[in-house]
Image (cartoon, rainbow, N blue to C red; front, side):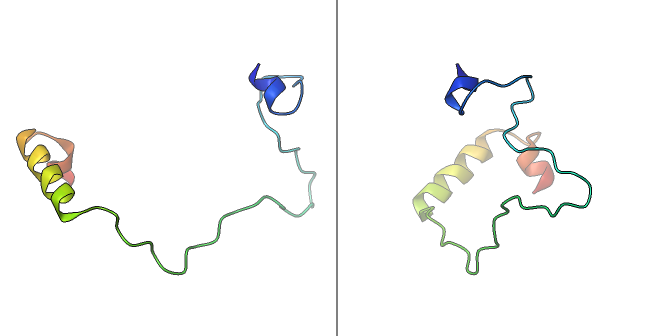
Length: 68
């Protein structure tokens, strides 16, 4: 069903819609550009405090505290 939804039948299970490039052909794949200004955080102070409290309840062996 998925293969039919993406535009037709596939001869194999590669699930790739990009054709293979031949040697010497330019790479024309789309790549995102860097955002000129970072987006502002949508996290409220109350949410940040609730998250910190939750992480505090997990104990000292959690990954967040080991990497922190």
